[in-house]
Length: 201
Image (cartoon, rainbow, N blue to C red):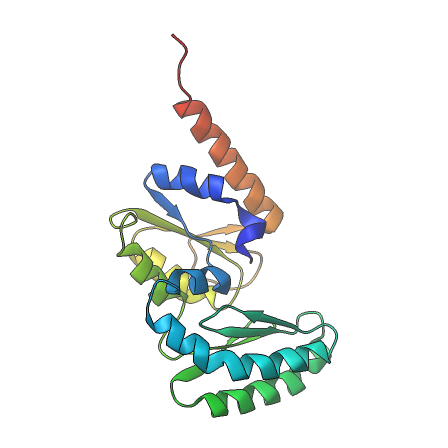
């Protein structure tokens, strides 16, 4: 689930002013949050060679997509499932070259290389410890296997966890698809705006 397909920064701003952090965290947002750390530059440098190798592989195989998030690399094969075996083999080789500081996270038709010991749950926990989100209630929307880490942390904070689509999940709520998420957020923003609109004298 990509952040841009769910809501724009206006909606995020509205939610934040209500005391809610609407963190629809695909790996892209996790990467954005972790840009705050100085260690980002070190990790990004380590991934340069790996990114070049995976990018060349993706370019030579239509249907593959490499997502470079700075602190991690995700190779998507949703549009070319027949290439799963080759993709897994190459990612395994690249991981071996990166050394013990990295690990492979398998998702829904995606293989992600990232620093070891980190996932969406740990990213949310760190994010929620920072101002201005400290003390607020997190809401997390996701559709991937890797989102389960985030759901667990959000549930532990008494927040709102929403699974998009089918499949087993520890999320407390479920919604049909990305279009339904957009409609839900638009409805919420509309209601909030109506309640808080300035009243004419």
